[in-house]
Image (cartoon, rainbow, N blue to C red; front, side, top):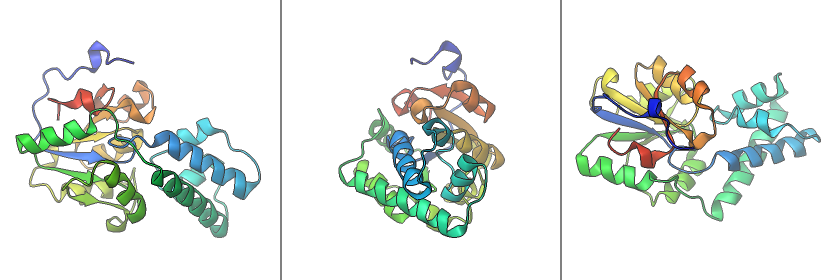
Length: 225
């Protein structure tokens, strides 16, 4: 779906710094997460869970995703089995190769060339983060991941921890993400939010989460960030 006219970045001042979501924004992983969570739910619960429901929760930390998908809080042992089942399947699939989203590498090069400070903020754990960064060619960029954070999105601690690495006022930092949870966390931290459609979320949901603009993918973000 091409960017609609009201999604174009008109009249937007250049940010002093940029905060980048990794999983689903720079690396094309959203539907892999849906499939691997779906398989984990089917194995542990011995019944299928609608994948549309899983998709709507992608981007949340594991425990929050499980609670939201099931509408209840299962026992800790069940939550651990579900999270482990998803993680093991995701990492196994990642070994076969993950791919950057369209324009992700060009965007990173553009930010480097223009000297725009930028960091990656992800709620992924260390193993997942390493697989995701490998898909980007392991660029030399600061990363804040789940091991550094007291909470995951939409908790604003994700954004505060990453923004602390940037020498810029929060109001002058632009955050790029693919899910409403990114927008909620960015807004709570006082950052402006630019959304891409690579997460498969609708424009309305992204705008309701605070997106100042909605673009197809990182390729459309050149000159915006």
